[in-house]
Structures are given as C-alpha cells and as structure tokens.
Length: 245
Image 1: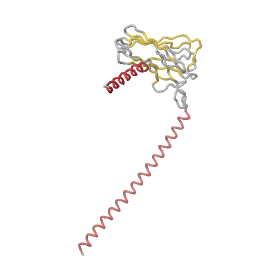
Image 2 (image 1 turned 90 degrees about the vertical axis):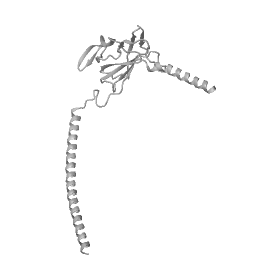
Image 3 (image 1 turned 180 degrees about the horizontal axis):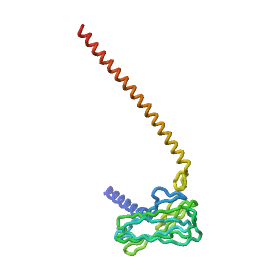
Image 4 (image 1 turned 135 degrees about the vertical axis):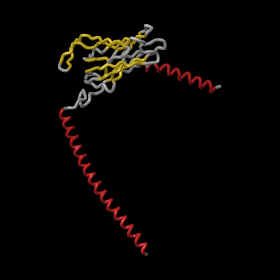
C-alpha cells in the first residue's frame, strides 16, 4: 500500500513538473538559420507554437526593434498565409551600400488564409534580415499571437537581468561576433589568388607523385615477371634431375 502511494505521489509530482515547465518551451521565439553575426545578414525563423487545444493560431504580428532598425527585412512567401510588411520613417537615416535609407520595416504580419497553426503543431515564419547592428549583442522583437477564438497573447515582456523569465517573454535574437573573413563571408582577391596558386601547386605535386608511382609499379611488375620465370625454369630443371636419378 505504501509503495503504491509513493508511486502515485511520484507520478503526480512528475506531471506537475511537466505542466509547470511546458509553457517555458511553448512561447514564441526567434532563431537564426545558421549564425547571426554582427554587421552581417541572416535568415531568422520566428517559431510560433499553438498552446491551445481548441483553437488555431490565425494571425502573427512581429514588431521590429526601433533602437537598432534593420534596413532590410524580407519575409519568405508561405502557402496559406497572407503577408503584410509595414514600414516606418527613421528618425536617423541608415547607410546601406553607399545609399541612405530613410525608412525601415517596423512590423510584419502573417494572416492565415486557411486553418492556420492547428492545435498540437507549430509554424516557422522565415525572414531575411540585415545588416545586423555591430554595436549590440541581441535584438528584441515583440510578437502578438491571435487565435481563431479571438484570444490574443502578447509576447512583449523584456527579460530583465537577474530576474526570472517573464510569463510572456519577447523573442530575442542573440548576435554572434563578426567573422574574421568579413561581414558577408567573402574572400579578398588576394586570398582567391593565393588559393588558386596553392591549388595549382597541389595539382602539380599530385601529378608528379602519380607519374612516380606509375613508374615504380611498372618496374615492380617487370621484376615480378622475371622472378616468376626463373622460378618456373628452376622447377623444370629440378624435375628432370629427379627423373634421371
């Protein structure tokens, strides 16, 4: 009886832990496809899970940061979703490829044209963004999730240092250090020339090695034939001596 009670208590405790920890993994989040390096470009996915059992997610709104505006933000087309990109004037123009940018994307809205994100599923909403700021370690996006039953969940609470995670945290994109090869990962003309010369030298060395190996193989083949012939001759002579004896 005691064992049964202990087992039941353990099961209830485990269920409670799962129930309490589940929401921490179910909020709207943002992650890069690969890396999001400072000063570079990246494709990021806004991951939207459905937390309801009786309603679908039919609308997702993501507000872009104003303290570090992004000159370029292009959503990927998605079947079953209507996408609206909203831009706003910048208080301080940005410079991109030698041109001044006076407005930037302030919000992207995805509206379901069908069932949306149904219960038990999640959906990724990809967006190409850049250039990422060089003077920030992270970017905070605020998201609003609307369900088919008209319920609205606002993922807009900013995590404060030294405090527990808020109930409805805003998606945060962590930026990595800029790569040594450059923000866009492109090599210089000098690097390309060095790589080409190295490749030619390697090819020449490989060719010389192949010729040397081929010559060695031929010599060994001839030696093998001679040795084999001598062995056969010796065997014949030995057989004749035995017969004469």
